[in-house]
Length: 290
Image (cartoon, rainbow, N blue to C red):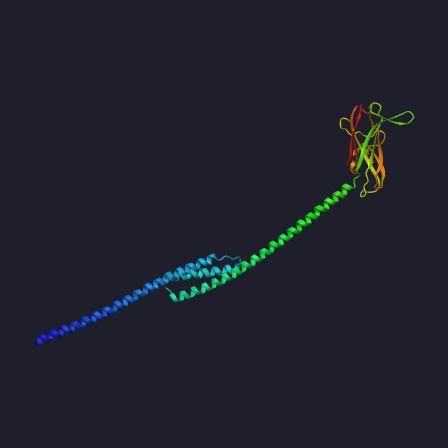
């Protein structure tokens, strides 16, 4: 009987021990499950934080500015982000502190975004203002160039207007009779001189007073004939001429003639006669001698 009681006691003790051990095992299992969940959750937080830091670094990389001070500051912020990413990977820093520092960097970046946007808007406004000023300068320069062209054209017109205009240029071969009378001829052998008459037109802007008109007489071969009865005739710049005459011009229409005596006898052919004023040929015609 006593032996049975001992067995029962041992069984009871074993049952209690087994129950206690089962309870403890159950508690350890719950703790392991909780810790496993915490580890998984911590890993997820770190992965999410690392992804968030990667996005933040990319956002910093996309910021563009020409402000050297801001560029230096943003470079320093990117370096801090690189350091935080390393801490996340090394697991030597608490997630909560990493999150706070990440949020601080994000707020700083948002400030940069606002500042850069303001600077860009200001630059756009300045560029628009510069473009408007450049357009105004271009308009003014074009206007000045147009005025300059008009002035040059006007000066050219005035300068051209100062040259006399002639019409009815009429050269004729002349032979002098024994009594001194002048008679026209068309025969080269009889001709002694060429008399060229013309009409000067009215010109109110031409210089008034004494003017020297020149005559160029070209033989049938196109050579300039020099005067034969006096010293060589030269226009301005030393350009030779065949004959010259000074007239008193008062701006009104007038008639005049110039006589040319050749150094050699005339030959048959077509002679070309140019009337010159101020270095410009103002009338041209031909004379045929048989």
